[in-house]
Image (cartoon, rainbow, N blue to C red; front, top):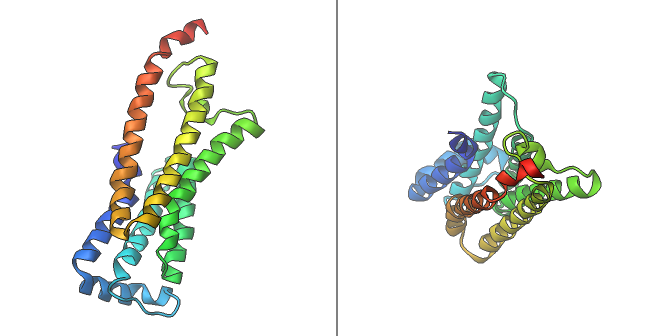
Amino acid sequence: MKLLFDLFPVILFFIAYKLGGSYPHEAGQLASTWLAWLVAGGGVTEAQAPILLATAVAIIASLVQVGWLLARGRRVEPMLWVSLGVIVVFGGATIWLNDETFIKWKPSILYLLFAGSLAAGRLFWNRNFVRTLLGQQIELPDPVWERLLWVWSGFFALLAAANLFVAYRYSTDTWVNFKLFGLMGLTLVFVIGIGFWLSRHVKEAPDA
């Protein structure tokens, strides 16, 4: 359930883009009615409408996501605040400048912030943020926590590079598919692999 909640803006972005591509005339009219005043120059073509509408939907979904947690008195995780800030800034730039480059950069910027935060926390403040997040759930030897942090940091950097590679080498349609299924698939495989790796070390913790 939490996974679906976390992916809520990404899934709606995908759906909005696909619907816009399937119904270009209606998407063009909708974008012209609701987004033209936000776009520099004021013009939105049918070809531009799907990505602009999808971006607007993702921004709104992210705001609703955080607002729902706040309204229920729930804690909003730092990663969610960061994600909201990045989508508002880069998504807003895409709509305002009518340039899909910014929304394509958004996942890479987010992943680089995650990778950089993990690395900076360890190098400059001697803190292992992965251990901070997971330390109450599992017990691991200190060297394993250290490796786990750098593996996660490297994986986030790899995702950032993969997103840019697809964004610049392939069509927007391909990138939208990769954004949902490719990045999510890579993350799922990675998490499963990490789970198997950690299972070999959890029992070592009491003796560490």
